[in-house]
Image (tube, rainbow, N blue to C red):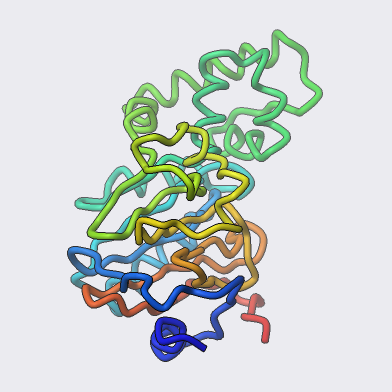
Length: 264
């Protein structure tokens, strides 16, 4: 067991999943200031409020960074967007589900089916708009117009302005995973939204750590310079945040609903 792995294990309160060896010379995690990296919310405003309270208590000086996927699947997408837009100083990354919502606004006929199958109907319902997956073209277009109207309060502009990634020191925070063989500047945008096929397999050679969501895990994990904070909040009732100190210590905390316990 190499030195970095021992260092991570001592500082992570839950068992850390290891997908492969970490090089002995891999740089230590060094953000510019304390961070609270919060996983995929997916329409769970109840858990969002709880995790914000937990972060405030556990790491009051940490800057909150959200990894995307605020909408769809859960029942409270509208409330989640309203809450996030009200936060001062927080960083919100765009996820693939925000991208699908925006695509629906632009071309509902071609993109509506995929979005609805992946939780878009729950987002529409949170705004009082009903649309079934097997709806006709007229119904889809009508729903698109209704959604565009309710998002005209500044929400659509806010969504379009979300960055694909954000960086502090040698920590990159994004929704999914960039190609480890390429620099961040050389990435295709879709890698940040949907993840590159090599991201979970290969290590980066530039010493850059990547914190992300997108891939649901039973527990958050740290491995090979990656920090995964997606624990499937909409389904499991567990929303995770990784608290990262300036000296690279990592502590996972969660907001949970009653009846959902951490396995193991």
